[in-house]
Image 1: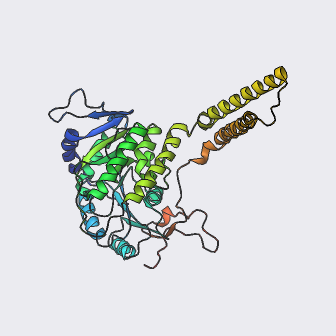
Image 2: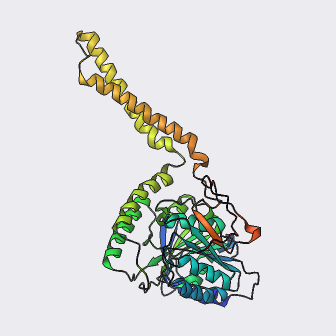
Image 3: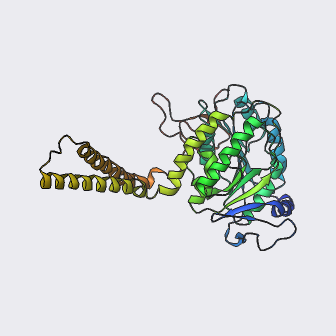
Length: 392
């Protein structure tokens, strides 16, 4: 990260009024919308007195086949970040690109040592890219944005302002989205469903433009399509979540990677998130209660059959109710056992990633003092030091 710390960042201050006038925030499960005319009682309580000062910034950019966009994004990012007057780093993750994205990242690193590049062995998805970016990020604030130039770097000061107000995660809201209907319509369905299922009333869970305090980002364990649910996961951990309307630009280079197939995957991961947020610390509540109900029903049915056998001397061996009684007891016992197993496994199984995973093939820009080794590299592959550079 850059060592120099110029004087006060004017850009942060200039962004405060705009963010305060149109920002939407969520705290403790409720949405607060600031009055556009004046700060009034609907403005969420300021928590800045308890929030640590922001002294450094990390920008994490996951990308796939974005060689034409990265140089422009780097130029715009450095212009905005230089104005903040604090050290920063830009981490770009090449998620298995098939074009010249990695060569572009290495070129950017040669010209600017604040650029850090990570290269995945293949396309593992955005969640894994973000997880590896979070693992090496060193900033007090971690800002995530896409590499397609649809997110506007000029919004960064507004995110910092919102974090200064005491929020741990601020999610962007693309109010006027510049995408085709085939992309926006499934997104609206997805956002409505997540909002209703999670109880976190954000408007745009799909927006990749987000700002995290470091402790919030480091506490997230991301895989699959869980990157869409970071506000839900963070809220479940007690972090304060806010929302900020952001500008959105049409894509000018490359192709969108979003479609209906990702919508289906997102709904499947929504089921995972529902479990993680509501039952992760108490799996017995999810499995134990149905198990006990099944056992109780099976026992009661068995007692009724036994009483019928004793009182009427009727045969019960060929009655379907006997089989049903046995099945209820067996299945109920299995559910109860799953609950117990979940209780044993729940602690420690959801720890966030502190090391890079073996998806990372190479990196540029990580110094000797920040050497990390890929976790459990496959057989025949040597452990990777993070200052190694692979050929493009």
